[in-house]
Amino acid sequence: MRTTPQLRARHRPLAHWRLAALLALGGAVVASASCSQVAGLALAVPGTEQPANFPAMVYGLAKNQPDAAAFELGKTLFYDARLSRDGTVSCGSCHQSFAAFAHPGRRFSPGVGGQPGARNAPALQNLRWRQHFMADGGVLGLELQALAPLTDAHEMNTPLADALARLNADPAYQRRFAAVYGPGKIDTPQFLRALAQFTASLTSANARYDKYVRHEAGGALNEQEVSGLAVFKAKCSGCHATDLFTDESFRNNGLDRAFARDSGRAHVTGRAADRGRFKVPSLRNVAVTAPYMHDGRFATLAQVLAHYDHGVQPSATLDPLLRQAGGRLGIPLTAPEQASLLAFLHTLTDQEFLTDRRLLPPH
Image (cartoon, rainbow, N blue to C red; front, top):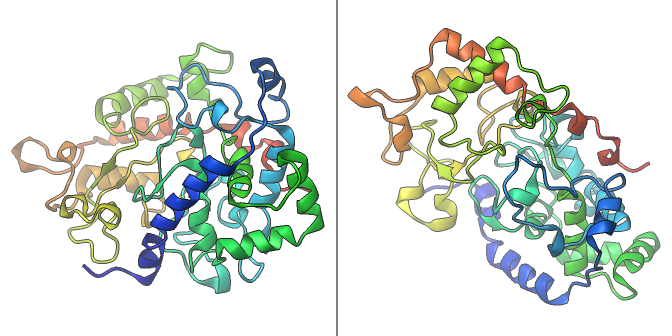
């Protein structure tokens, strides 16, 4: 199996990330907070409440208690390009708030030296509800996820030790970490938990669809959108399940017949049965996160629907849901069904999330 240098580089550090997770569990200092204190943070720190139409959090509040100072510290780290090897790329360079923290218009985001990444930059939203990270699920845990782009040679390309050294050499960071975690050297657990304070806050739960299912003001859907919801439930919800609009599974959705460039989940498991399988993405804010798929091959949602209707490619690992009676592949969608689906997908756009000033770069 041939893989690209970018994907080989991304796969190698997994054992290191798991070790870092153990360090984080054993060495972090976490401030406690009562339920009333957490509720009081709502105006300062987004994402501290459980949406009524969401399943239970995976990364619960108790794992890294919300704290206003820690949130602001994590936000500063997220937008700080000095953490990259050459000081030109931050997390926020490829994950932009107005596009649900995706990188609109970019198939592959440029990293240090302008090198393109291996995959399309995903939206960052509702991360508290995720178990696996990366398109191949190669990272387990929200805190650990930050190490992937930081150390990847084609993204920020900074060894963890170098990043920590830069933070410890900065008096402002020293003061801010000490204010949150107590005096002492800035270490891996503190760094990862501070970043997670920000990324865990990226909650999108106030789209028009959410207000519709919660019977709240501003939640009206028109006839075409309701029709699109019915089509979605019948033909799309098998993978894009719950109001997170993903079942967190890994599936081959028929993009290719062979997987020489990127074999997906098989990079992690080594199993032939996982070739071409990628994590099912959430469809929240999907109207603003183009291009689509792990490699950004589709520029529009209309192209995505056309793929499912008549573009699915056969392979040994193709998902069974895309095999129809009579040998047809894909999900048959009439023109009216596609139009209504597109209308419904736009109801998943959460303008409150996309315009939340608390998530913008610090001044």
